[in-house]
Image (cartoon, rainbow, N blue to C red; front, side, top):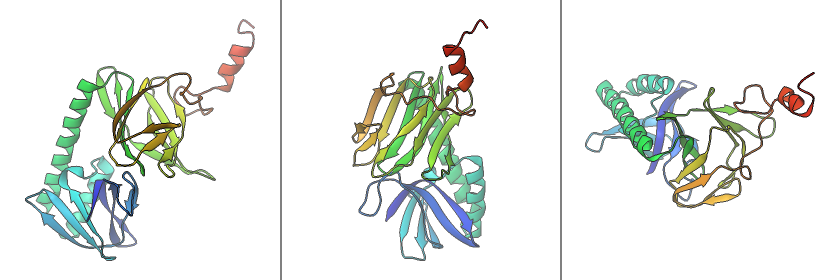
Amino acid sequence: MTKLAKWHVEEIMESFVLGGFIASDSERFLAGTFVITSMIDTVEVDEANKAFIFHTMSGSEYLCLFEDIRITQRFAEFSKDNLERLKVVSHFVDEAIKLAHEKESSFVTKLESELLSGDLYLELGAGGIISVHFKYLDGVHRVSSRIHSGMFVDSYLYCISGVVDFRHYAFCGGIVSTYHMSDSIKRLVVNNIGSRPVTIDKKVYESGTTITCVTEENHPEGLVSPDAFNGKSWMTDFVKEGNSDV
């Protein structure tokens, strides 16, 4: 049975499927890989262990803990609606969402006591990044991602306007390259939950937590983009190189 983290249930072509991140390395998947399953056949509720067990039409089984349901507003709303349409009793869904909020709150409190301002915390495996948090001043913020579809390769953007901006290309074989980090990022705190190493910008991160200071040598060059926080600017470069008194 495959365990998923940050999971949700969505409707595609009038059928329900399960989406989520692989929680540990296996023969089929690397930890952190995002998957969309085949059509859901049945759902079991393991009340004692606070978990759902999803059976798909392809014969696969997925273990999804209550506390790992994805709780951003959009995902929580349609997961709740879709689970109820799959005949899951509503109070189990409500309990899952409640437990997930409690887990996130507890985790943020833990990070606030452990991280320094400017720390970017990455929870990942060789298949991809599962979650990102950033400590700014005294608070820790969960940073959601959005995908930018490129002509040749997709990229992933983790941004809070005016606070933090972290961008990387898609994972490939446990290797990922970043192409922009805002100056507010002082250290990368990488928690590799998988059993295989992950390489970020040529630095290898084994299982467990590793801290890397961001320096001029390993800081990706600023991005020329009007939407990038701390990015390059053609006007800024012109002023630096020209006579600013003119």
